[in-house]
Length: 142
Image (cartoon, rainbow, N blue to C red; front, side, top):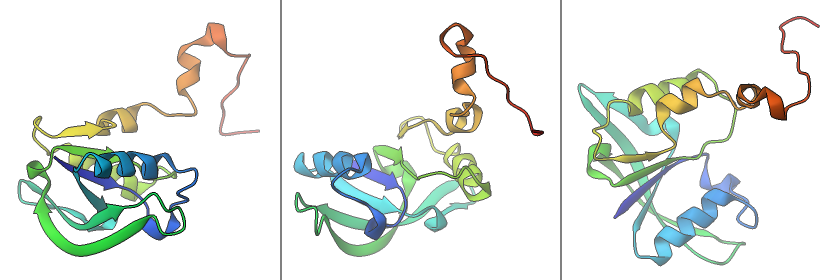
């Protein structure tokens, strides 16, 4: 299977504690193809979601967790799973990434669903369960 990880640059990954690293390592250990994708290398070409990805070998050595190979342009409709693993902030670039991914066919599994990332704010989500939260005020004004 082909696994694409949309995430921050690999040289910023802290392998000793980064969940993305462990997901990539597990995929690699099961002989899946691991591909790294920076949000800036994602684009829509008419009706096809395209990307420039880097093939990655993942190692258990936390000091040198990755070996990067050739970059290649691919149609993301041809991959099996896409993991959206970028760190905050939820900015315009992140927003447009989720909109572009909405063009993928249902045959591509996306973890986490782009619409959910847009609609489910991590800071406000707890307020859907007021019986489990302390009294809370959310405002633009102090």
